[in-house]
Amino acid sequence: MLSKNKSDSETVLTELMIPSYANFGGKVHGGIILSLMDKVAYVTAAKHCSGYVVTVSVEGVEFLSPIEVGDLISLKARVNYVGKTSMIVGIRVEALNPKTGIIRHTNSCYFTMVAKDESGQVTEVPGLHISDEESLRRFAEGKALKLLLKQKHQLLKEKFHEMSISEILKSVEGEKLSYTPQEK
Image (cartoon, rainbow, N blue to C red):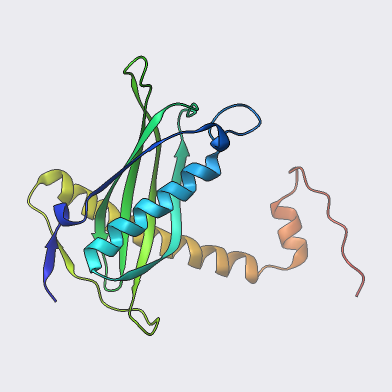
């Protein structure tokens, strides 16, 4: 399978933040931003693999600064890493205040997307051709992230699924937790 240039799938989605997106505090609701990030991740990954993709995980979502109604947000996405059937898409969100011209970095995250064929089965994705050091660094970070996520899931599964209830209770001692066992 051939590789594709990183620029072939880079995507920028710009959208006006309207009043219906506001939460009770008057700022844009975080769920709206997450939905837009999922959309731009989909477009980016679908362009890279020329097909259907699904979101399998979202990592490192950071809400750095509130987004105001009236801001123009730009979601900048690119494929940072490709595995056999998956891609890690890095997303940076910037908000432009059209009155002041000030641009703020408001959000960052990583979406892992998996390619699917017409029958819904996972399918191989093209490689990623890069020619600059920053992209090489992002690829290496993506590989490390994939490994860390695998290790984290394995550790949590092994640690807590094999512990007794008394061991689990001891591990959360001092936390804001009230536990009453259900009657069997």
